[in-house]
Image (cartoon, rainbow, N blue to C red; front, side, top):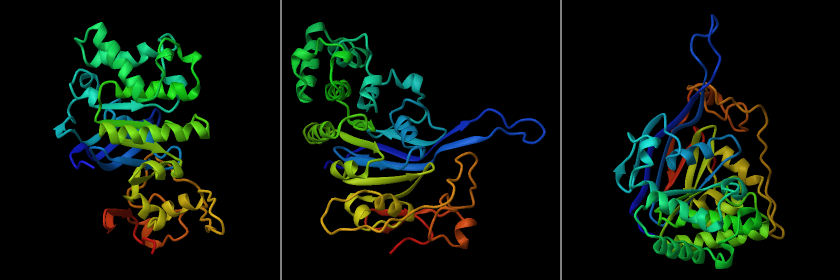
Length: 330
């Protein structure tokens, strides 16, 4: 893996001011903390998994990293260039726009039904790499289609004439046609059959190796992430609560939430049993969260008095391994 930095996000936050909360009872509006103080580094050719349950902030972070929405705080650098002060409206016109591309969750919803597969793939090329003639655009689209094993006879078809796997390939080809350095994939296989998922994952891994493109793979499916990624970040209520090499996370989770997630993953190994860790209690609200308490308080089987009065920091617990917990698991 090339260690050149493709993405360097430091202390990224994304907050949403909600309606209501005014009047005599409350003078300020409530704030939803979707992403809180997240730092993320991705090297060229690296595959990083971002996991967590629905509503934890994964997709919001993916959209901030893709420059589809602006962060509330923090700094963001791409290919060594600071883009923090460039808002999304102006980033569209930056030469860096083509370097980060996104593959969306549902290929049926993310493809323009009025465009043929050819035009869907060609559109970012026409928008982000202007000046290419018709022949050059056609050649590049066909090259991108070949890279994702999309038969040329399908390029004239519209999305409703394609299968789920074919639409997924069109979405990946659309992202790859401008030679990005980073692909952000938001649950790209969740809408596909299991057999098709395996094919798409193999395709993504091959593209990563051949094109040296980095991957940020957002998913709630830990088995899928384990197959594709060398490093995992675990997210809970807007915070990264554990990060580290994939096998370390799976074999020796240090955070109670990570252990609970992994205990829910079914195993097919003969004779292997995993003790199920259940998180009882209510999920804390991401709206105006208590800054003086761990966000897992009330659900953690191992919580102690300190957890309710001091939020833990993300600290090293091994080579390349970090955990946000006052009392990491052994």
